[in-house]
Amino acid sequence: MKIIPAIDLINGKVVRLEVGRFDKVKIYTDDPVEKAKEWSDLGAKLLHVVDLDGAKIGKPQNFDVIKKIADSTELDIEMGGGLRDEKNIAQAFSLGIKYAVVGTSAVQDSGFCTRMIKKYKNRIVFAVDVKDGKVAIKGWQESSDTDVAEYLSRLEKMGAKTVIYTDISKDGMMAGPNIAVLKEILSSTSLDVIASGGVSRLADIKVLKGLEKDGLKGVIIGKALYEGKIDLKEAFDVV
Image (cartoon, rainbow, N blue to C red; front, side):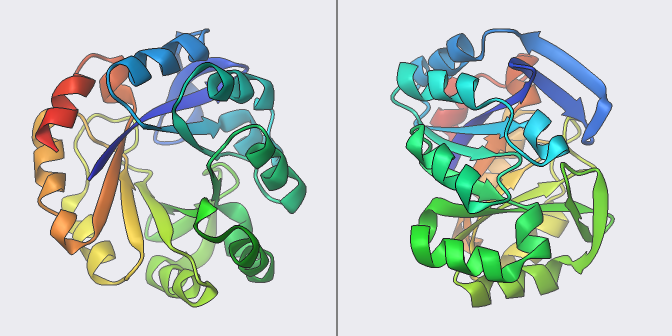
């Protein structure tokens, strides 16, 4: 199981939101490149980067910062936030991004996403951001009418390989992941699943490690790292 540190960006700064709310922002540093280097030095191989400005507006806004991270580290980067057309996905790859995380477009335009899967294969990763049992879109600001199980089935039929499942109600709240719902997700799909949201202590990682046999491939950790609740090296030792 992979441990994946997260960097969320607003105006080039590393931030965290609470339950996806842009009015509940905490800034941790204005130097995301140094933070990425820190995670790399501690043993990270893959970095999860979200352009929150891009997610809100619908077009990436922090490509310059993300390019600096790619150029300054050996990290593989999975990037999401505003990647809603092929031009921006192609630009992300040209900057050194390894995986493009697509969310809103997958809910609204299956044809587009099918084309991207055929062209870029497993470099297209899909965000399954869930709020009140429905898939959220547009930077978590809106809820769709799409049921989670229906959405996962649709992605499987399109040929998707990997999804990042985020329980928005848990994100940034430091209250632990929703294990029961995650188990339901894992049992309902053959897709590789990366979990995100709520991980706040090493004990959470140990529990998630137990779900590896059910198809859990990784866990994204954000606020718990920035608040010092989880030591990244200790997290790697657990897995």
